[in-house]
Length: 156
Image (cartoon, rainbow, N blue to C red):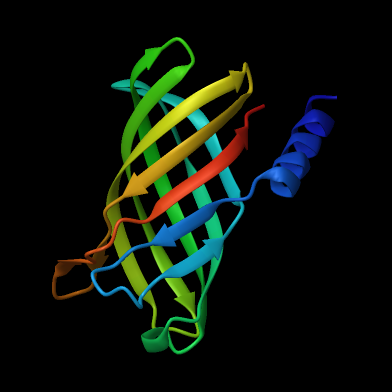
């Protein structure tokens, strides 16, 4: 019964969870939109209550300089609860991952902040902001963008 509940929960979350990200850059013609949808995490306690896991998304950009690019993004993350007041929660953490597709492979590392509003015991809506740095064998370089993600999340 436990495994059936877990599988149904994952399928339900995949079906209903849609993440929208908007990337604003310094040049106004460089807007792109991605709709992803899968984050699988597990609660932990390291320093304070938190969560670690993996995120997967798919993006497409038709901006002039982007040349109609699509790509996948896979990230490992760790977030910690900083404060919770009633139904509001603030988490801080970081992620590391890779972007790949019909673009060159890009490795990134980013600090992130998450503001959550708990609607029910196991349902919340959140906004996540991160500040990514591109990471290669020679250096780490800021990306000059702040990706924002908003989603409805189900926990089980």
